Image (cartoon, rainbow, N blue to C red; front, top):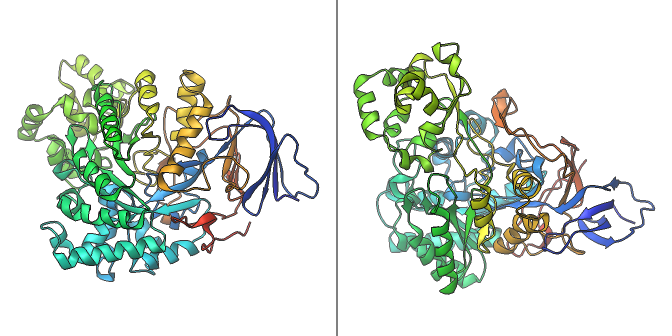
Length: 580
């Protein structure tokens, strides 16, 4: 007898093998049987999957659901689109370990770097923990619709051990290094899959609340390498390091971490920007050199056709590291920003400082931004046009047009990026086919006021398989499930195979999609605050640990998700909620 049987679906199992038609029987959270015909006698839940694709759940190694899981157990957008496991603690940001006196500062940092609304965190975070081990115990008891795994976030660790100012201004002492090393061991004993950090110096848009870099962005590399040796001692774990973005390349640190740890390092980020057509090839050549040197480095891609919708109040994070917008982003509130946009001296500086090529790490050049809503000003007739097109009409420059619109709409005009990621399927295929590239980097849970990224799997299937025919479903599901499972050490997930965890989703390839024109605004944060989302179409079922959590986009009320740790087969230590 099975708990769930999926009948007659076309199985794309994640291994890269050709698809086939079969039934799948699920029992006790596992895939118990895959056969041409599976007996449904006594089975309480039979899913008719004929004519649809049955695939392993998507595994996303780069999200920021650390806070959102407290008010959204399903971690949407991601789970709507077939994601069944996500990793938190990325880029060195998180809430553990944390002293009681630092809680407000941690939440402020998360708001400023990842745009997680402060009020939502203050409302929802219970702060029942101080250490990583205590946070892990808390996370295991949370009701979760999908699985989570967690890095030790290095910003949190450095501040906890060294103090806020010291972490940002000097190397760790011998004693501090030893304490951090012991705490990393303790965290990995509790289930951490490794540690995460960013290292972009002043270029990183992840600025602190005083607009200075976060601790790991300017940390002494020797301190990070010292911690990497913990993973070598243990023979397990993975490191995430955001060290290359736009024109800034600190990939040498990823090399040092891989060499010291003898473990996989997830380099961030590889992109294929249209205005820098050879950028991704340089990263891929570097990955090849690292492989030849025996270093196990993967690069996480930003490949989906993503975009941002914003007014200049919400989008500071894209601009905090690029003149002249760095100055502009420091103005708090619509009135102050509109006033600066009207300042002739600032406008002269902006015109002189603006660099088209410097913008491809910050949402794309201003010329490629589209005007969505001009708030009934004289620019209303230009809605739907690119700023370059409006500049041509105005006999002006795009940078001047941007600030003209900001000025005349009191900073409330809405814009849309059109070149934040590549629109060239040839370059994206080239990037995704590299054996050391991962799909993902959804940033799920972050930047909710101007973007959504959890739909990346749906977008890649639509774009690269159905529309362009450049990659097969077999290739894409291997890339989105088995490869990340192998890299981060989830040995019993990522493929549809008897004995493996029953994480999977069912979709209709012909109708699979989402709104490619605009995000939807929903008021589902604590206190009815709003965010932007991209709902899935054509995803009929999502199943986690053998329990359906979504049917046609509606949740079932079940919470079978688990906290996954290294060596923690099928989450046996988890106190997951299983009530339907």
